[in-house]
Length: 363
Image (cartoon, rainbow, N blue to C red; front, side):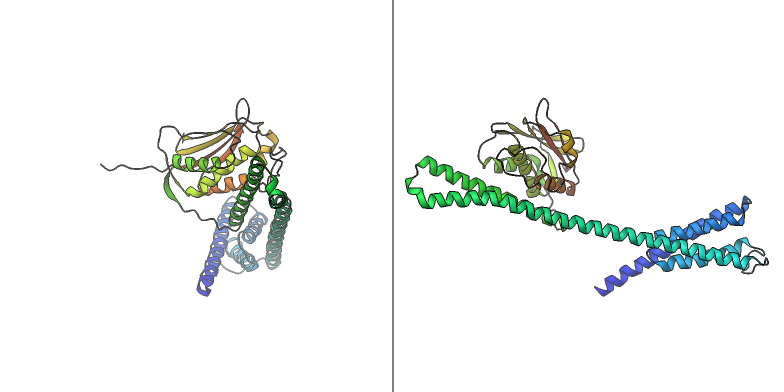
């Protein structure tokens, strides 16, 4: 660990030295051009001060701007004052000029470094504030969203325990179904929460393998169909066998989340269609519904974490706002894109792409 840290520091020092040297060489070349064009020494001094400013921006420590200030004075004395190519100056005013040049360059570089530090502090404070806001939103949303299904589950279970003997079979079946629905919703919520946590911590490794896209779609739709049959779901993968390089389970989660999203925001009986095909050098999966659609002003934020929009959920549960965020994170981790468009004449279409895996046949 110590050796790795030492190597990292050495690389940082070498990078800063290379940047400083490159900037100094560049501004010296510009200054020589200015001198050939008979520009005044004042113009050349300003070029070197600019170089110190650029060095302070491009490097990570104040020492580089200090060294750049000293080097600028020395190079200016060596190349542009009489007698040239020596470190002496005949004119009596030049020592004062050198001191003023050094102080101006050094102060400019110091101010630039302080500005960089303040900018980093502001970024860190903004990141911390965002993290705290996300944590607060998560706790508030979870406390609300968990209470409703847990209350329903406990109430129905209490009714069955207390008065189950007096209920007819249809009533019992409905209570069992409600308990099952709420428990499945809680399982989905917890899975999305765990996935969101892994993404935020950078711990979502992809287990890539070559898969048939049609098989992935069929598995996802089969999982969605095991839930209460309130929306007819049809699948069309075409006749072409498309191979993708993907983490099959994560892509299944994307499709399941998109289908669940269509179920939640459309009236019962609304048909949902899942199609798969080729679009250029990418595979494309589309989940379309004929519900009320999505307002234009909500589309840019639709894939943000904890954003659930103003649309009312059909089962009166609030959406946690994680499903579409996870879909985007998973698809982009695979090198694809995800978007939403209008389904003419009515409804919404969620579309995502995955890289195709080309197979070479050896005869």
